[in-house]
Length: 245
Image (cartoon, rainbow, N blue to C red; front, side, top):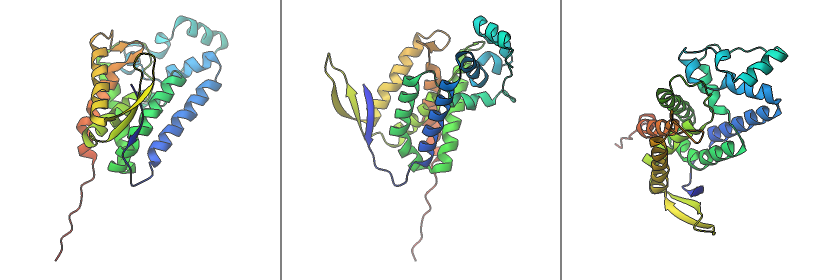
């Protein structure tokens, strides 16, 4: 089941959502333009690596042997971000492939505009980044010592899904479904679509090794969704009451 649009009009143009999508696309294109060794090194220097973030290993120590050998051969500088915690933010704009980028941006576009409309532009940006940080923290807790970079916007976007689940559960979401060899479109309540998405993440998490299932950091999804679910009402602007005399 793949959602592709919702039926939930907004009052404002989603400036932040469009800006985030553009930033993710630009960074991905930059990754593609880098030669293979430099591209891999870029992921390691700007991805969030649990072992490096927690001071259990240096960046050089977590590089794969083949990449390290290539770095030594070309005498490329290997320097982590300073301060290292900035990698938690830069990792949100890196992606491992076109499908990874496309699926994340599709979910951000479908569900992000309404949450931005609800919270306001500045509040939404802070909310998005905070959910991404908390998602990364959840993944780090279950993968302490991991030398693998965490990359992708999905943790922050999961926070957006959690917020949408709380505030717009009755909105209609149009999804592509694949019964047998056919493709059809169904309109379902957003609450059901997002509940099934979250349930799928939980089921993946049960069998995940080190918090990772099939190369996906599922606990970042779980942590991000729960963060958005818990925080959206805190970020929602208070409505001012008007007294009529």
